[in-house]
Image (cartoon, rainbow, N blue to C red; front, side, top):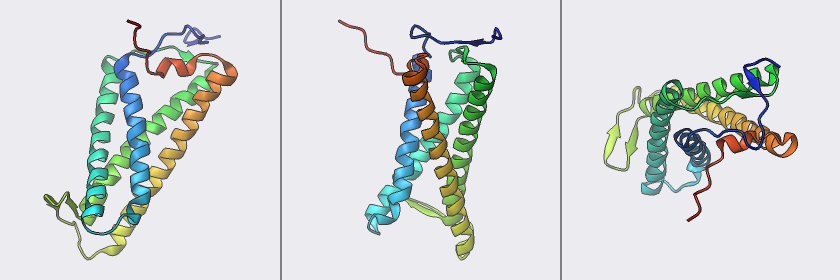
Length: 187
């Protein structure tokens, strides 16, 4: 086995608490944003829909900020653990993580573009003017692109989670424990 790759055990080290927090809060935000986006059209028009869409936009901006923090933290201070498995598995893991980051970036950028293209009302407090108010085709296309990116991101995130559970339950290599929230110390 290559020295850069290691097989984890149940005693394998964990990621630091900041890395774990950023990972799980991002996962929760992605899931919440996806559900809010999918069911937004079911919300009654007027103030209820404005509130849900505004919350969706704000949560998307928060995800964008967290994404920047995650990238900076990974480069500057986050714990870097050895890759698990053979070289092929490790490379697949690296590619998957890179694609997840790229999709998160694309989703945030496409969401900001959609707000700008469509124009929006944030909590009845602030109005974002539409880029081209009469261009319904552009608004439709921007919404479709944002939705497709969100669906692909969610599908890849679900596969990512399934593989982590498979590692934990079938391979029993402790991979999931590396990112699992730490247990609080006993009193």
